[in-house]
Image (cartoon, rainbow, N blue to C red):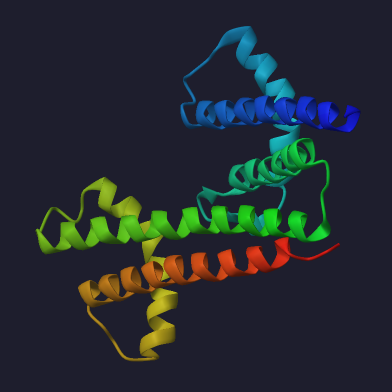
Amino acid sequence: MALSILARVLSAAVSVYMLLCALRVFMSWAPGANLGKPGELLATVVDPYLGFFSRFKLLRSGRFDFSPIAALAFLAVANNVLTTLAFTGRISLGIVLGMVMAALWSATSFVISFLAAAALLRIIAYAARWNSLHPIWRVLDAMLNPVLYRMNRLLYRDRIVNYLQGLITGFAILVILWIGGGTLVDLIIRLLDRLPF
């Protein structure tokens, strides 16, 4: 009973901290958004935690920093563990591993679906012959091209493919990865949840 109450209180605290972290991340996207003393207090409370994850070079790729996603995923796993403990009164290694896998897949799935949506937008823009020099397309190309290059290189080896074919192929691979990965992760999580320890 006491453990359940403690787990609920800690889960609520982790949820509030997750919201504060998300708010800080959104504030960092708008550098001119100065909230004065509350903004400074928010930065003081969450920047050390977010800064810990930003030290990992694996979470950064060029201009893109995925460390906030990892930081929030870690808090989500902690929150799920506490919530499970609060409501069931027990936790097992299999359940924790399943939660970690779900959080990792959630972050990976987000990136895959974002890239797939960007590829689809780029396909539509290319087919409609919209101005490909517009800054929005250049930003999308900067994100997509390294990923598409690697995927198409694996599939086509050293053959040269035109841009639209590369986009369509990359989009199809991303969709297959998203569906197949989700199905595989779901299966693994169900197996992990059944572990007796």
